Length: 96
Ligand code: H2B
View 1 (tube, protein in one colour):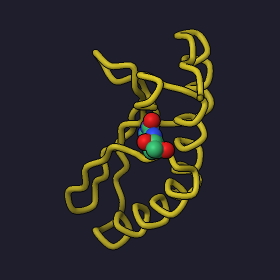
View 2: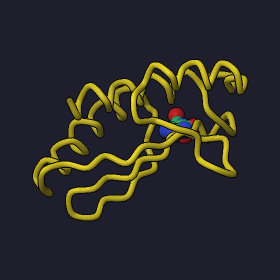
View 3: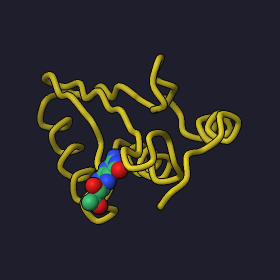
View 4: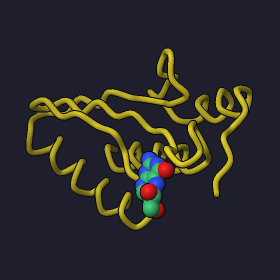
């Protein structure tokens, strides 16, 4: 099973994935993506869903019109692991 990152490792990893930050009060990372319209937002979610399913690692997220709020944490590990960093990078790449 993936191991929780240390606070230091998490901070360092976050420095390399623009827009992602710590979620206050939780061992989790998050980012709010804002797209041009709902179609772009939902396309992003659809492409992310395919990758998430392949990784067997799934985001917590909330969509309102063109905004997608994402929180990543590895539930099995109780915190942020390399899997969350990997998915965060993939989501940035998808969003372009
Ligand atoms: N997603 C996330 N974010 N954390 C997990 O620990 C997790 C998951 N575990 N997706 C997976 C599914 C697990 O429940 C299945 C059984 O592999």
